[in-house]
Length: 352
Image 1 (spheres, rainbow, N blue to C red):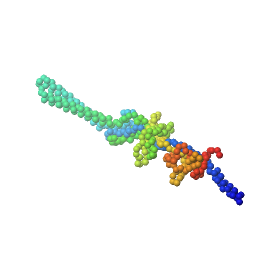
Image 2 (image 1 turned 45 degrees about the vertical axis):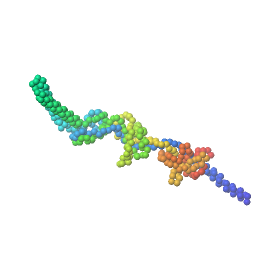
Image 3 (image 1 turned 180 degrees about the horizontal axis):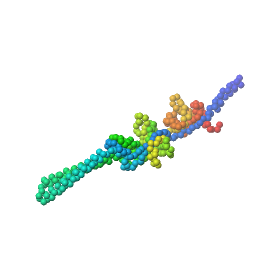
């Protein structure tokens, strides 16, 4: 009977010893660290001129000559195209003839005024005659001024038949051809200035997009083989485009050589956005407690406990936590699927 009791006690203690030994599970230890929340946005767009303008004639008419083509560089005041100016030339000649007649009438009125003043001084004239002569001179002077204004207007009309470049630029689009009838202010050319370039993107409506203002963008050309460029975000549209569901983002490109060759080139933008710091861990630490995410935290006695967490954002093979874990705490990574509350663990690289 004594032997049986000793054997029963031995058998009762045997599983306890084996269980205690098997509870010392080797798992991956991960130290929670606090890092800024970084998001890498990949954008696609095109390179455009920093400033561009659409030019058109100030009056309607028939195009008789086009002097530039797309891609041409033009200088300030350079002629781009001409309209038929027969009517404007005739109007200018009529205005000049009217001015000549008004000037002749003014000269006669001036002579009459001088004679009236001289006769009044000698006592052989009257004040009424002098006043009438001065009034005639005043009217003749007004006629000359109106004629001069008409000549200026007619000369501007002649000048307006020639479309000129307002500043140094590159022709990006030509919308007219010889013989075509154009209306006043109808776009005829699109010009891109030589003052700089910008990358224009249609970005997704990301909640962190507002933090991109003023940040640096790395630009990689898609269809042109050249070194990467660098730009700075200068504008983020406040509204979402209802047609595409995207937000227009503009980034000014730093000075580059041969910048005009980049106009219209497709470009890919790499934008790093960092916001408030969070606890970063590998995604392998995630477990579930009910309907909520959780992680296994290793206490000072190398025993684990399941703790619910709040996920802020997912990254590349990482997860950012906003609550549940503090920086410096040890969390179980690989091997967490074998755990239960209170189980004793040790790091996978530790010596037995």
